[in-house]
Length: 184
Image 1 (cartoon, helix red, strand yellow):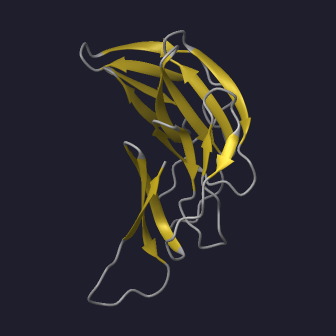
Image 2 (cartoon, helix red, strand yellow):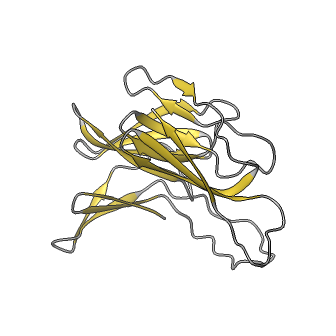
């Protein structure tokens, strides 16, 4: 299941009954992934239902964006499909597909929702920011990092920090991480 914290609530949604240990040779799932979910109030320990997502998914990338008009919104990227869940009114919205070649991990920034690539081992994937008003995606400049994997991004005020492990055999003495900063 996917878990996202907003205030004192933990939103638990999606997931699957399919269990397969790492490295095992398992047959695919026999049941579809879940679309349902529930909310745990961490302060009281009480659960309440939440509306079902438009479709089931087992794992997703998530980010919480504070919309000044609508409050906090949970963005969910399941495969290439982007969804938004509005906790204030318990509704899901379909926001379409991610553009081709744009990465599939999400991070919230003060400048919009960013989709970034977790790896560029199989060719360069693009990082892009979604305009919160019109929903269009704008490609960010390519980062100056070498080919890398295990990429993650963190918002830092007016910067987007990207960290990664370089592709290739690391020196036995050095296990390097590389970093770059994008200044908005």
